[in-house]
Length: 510
Image (cartoon, rainbow, N blue to C red; front, side, top):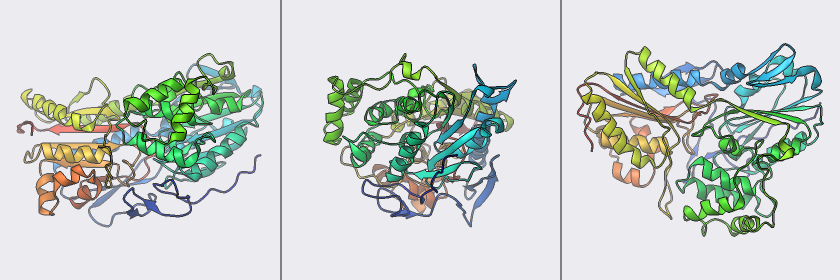
């Protein structure tokens, strides 16, 4: 049995010069917040729990009945997308074999098992591992976001930085790399990956280092890039991403189960693909930075390293067919489709007619507003009464160069934009929320708005246009009880957007 160190202190949204032990939850603007865990609201709130027993706090003040129904749909969709349920369905032990999808590993041929669970749903995924596998476990490590810690029997828990990595991320990752490197040919490494792993599992190459990795990550996150492009860059300056964790574990067998939070469920993009082949190359990473017009803004150490790789001076990440990955198998156990189906089912159970987006939502949130309002008009013209449109995915927010954002996230920002578009229409409601319990570097999962939200903001003296321009949605939504605050959810399967209309609405564009 490996002797793992005790977990470190909780961390928040960290800047490059900040160690995990040096501050509380902090936003980019310097505002401080209470820890994520144990959130409680004393007024206008209701508690509801998922299978894990965690408490969820959602304001009930000043909401329309239609908005209440959207919150109920969101809750049921979260329950159906629980990470523990996903692992239980896909990872089983039967007839003397570990079975995951089409993969079967004879249990009696496995000497030792090491388990690494990384991401915001890591505790729930670790809990769901069958006992016969745990009985062979020689080490178990959970690396999760600060505030998402939950003790799991047999596992050591490490908290690290998200959405920006920190020193705790590097310490936990280096510990994991050391542990897996000790596995032998008859051993099995079980890796459980969920959203957030890209930041939590961070060990940059020495040529770049942590400080420049944080600066790079900040530039990538504010450039309007999708997660595929972001992780294409991050994988090429990492000692663990892009299949390198599996290489470190060789010759042990590696079994990875991933809870997807990305459009398309592509394994290399989920958590940076630490145990799967990386099809991209250094030149692709360079191209991402140039197309996003941030090549000149990211640290020189990053571009110099990537350019050296593009010239062939640095070995590429493991590619498909690499023999070092011949004993590595990976499967997706749940994702955005699970969320969409669950939301649609919950809406039908409430008596609403349901329409679902045919494709995952991507691109700037600003572009979604006109599409959603056009969709609302179409729903009204159909004359079917109460109806909800369900969409899932991961849109982006692209901030102008030089912008110092306030406190918020893409779902809260979109919620304000939709509130502005539907202002005065009391027969509409809109919900946008992440399924992991956080939206950007905030304690909110998202927002719930309707046709009265703008007038309520005006009554509070809020200049909505200025708030939107400043990307400062968190406090504004809080003033009118329009934030969704859930705490840790034990899942992370992309964002959920719900647009509801009643037959009397005009569905007009604003």
